[in-house]
Length: 383
Image (cartoon, rainbow, N blue to C red; front, side, top):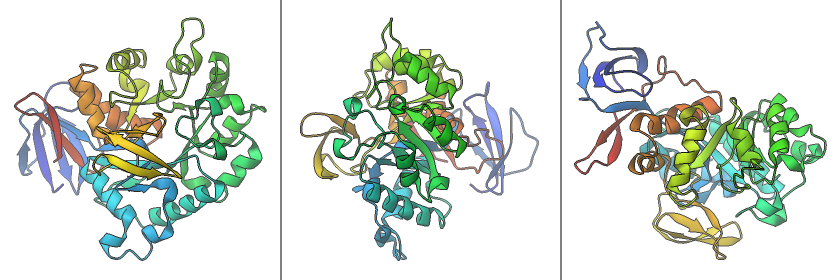
């Protein structure tokens, strides 16, 4: 944004209407009244927020991130040839400032090829487009009984030699790894990964309460798509999710598309998880994100997308084609939480989960403006 003063803004986490002073594209001050001479933008009581951060997104515009090739951006001086840039521009238009391309379970060769491509792309990222902040490896260290849409043929034992082989020289760009802690026979893998600066997220797991607690004590700090691909909450065996919700340092990602988790259970989750203190929204979007419903390839298989929900031929739920901020709109529409809380779950909470700055002050002013239409539906646009 150009230098200006945004007035009459509602900001999540702030009481009452605020003014925002912006200079050199940075947020310089937020206060009820700012005595500074700048051009004024009156947002008339609309909500203003930072852009979204998506920590689990598997592809978009027909490109699955495990399938990315160096030709998808190298030599792509022509925008039409640069598929990764197209995706980043598309996500920017969807209100996403930063994201973690998620590489689901596949061969070690495919994982390392994808990591090489993303490492090269990240070295030349440009402003005013969605930024790749790191990579999320969702697998291959998952429990076969909770693998969901992940191909069993490529699942691996959770052993140090396999972990080292997969990470290879790409440790610095891997921000998050999802694993099933009960597969670790040594009890050392979680602490090893966290010592490398990698955030460990528990998921696709049969871990009981004690196993999950042990992993959280060892440094695991996230849960991948709460409720999905893990045992249900039970009053005598709280399981992985029960353990996570009782840990103050753990944040649980969740999907709000109405298919992965029933809206009523989302109400239970957000209250138990203390809203953005213990939770954050993800899209879990697949490669047909941005494309119409239909049939699409997914590794060696095929997915069918109907009304934005993707399933394998056997009916297994494999993901969605709804973008991150649709989840915000759904949470408000279903009465799960109020507007400010819903916005925080997609903007502030994900930043906190991976250690990014979540303070408005000093941030680049890539702001979103949220308002209600004549039907009362929540909409957003870039300010």
